[in-house]
Image (cartoon, rainbow, N blue to C red; front, top):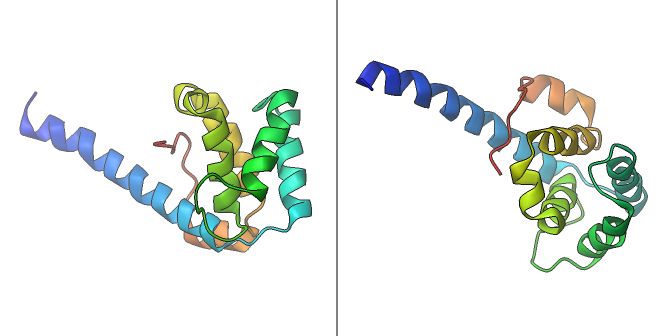
Length: 125
């Protein structure tokens, strides 16, 4: 593989990582009430991202996280979910995309529209 081929592979990855960083910054800035978090967790269940047995696990991580994930924001819910799902999210791009869609629904639309371009498979968990 030549230098040009390497650059062609690395540049899109750098752009995807930058888009992911912006997404996570938006998640960190989007405060969530317990009611909105509950609704998001139920949407994860309805969309088959999680099974019914994972609802109390994610809710537990939301309310009493294993680590300091900061204030009650979309970021905290995202991390609580990935913590509970461990390898399942990273192994399944469909679940990753669905998880982002649910969490994106908790972030105010104007922030997403003006600060982050849409990126199809943008997760590097």
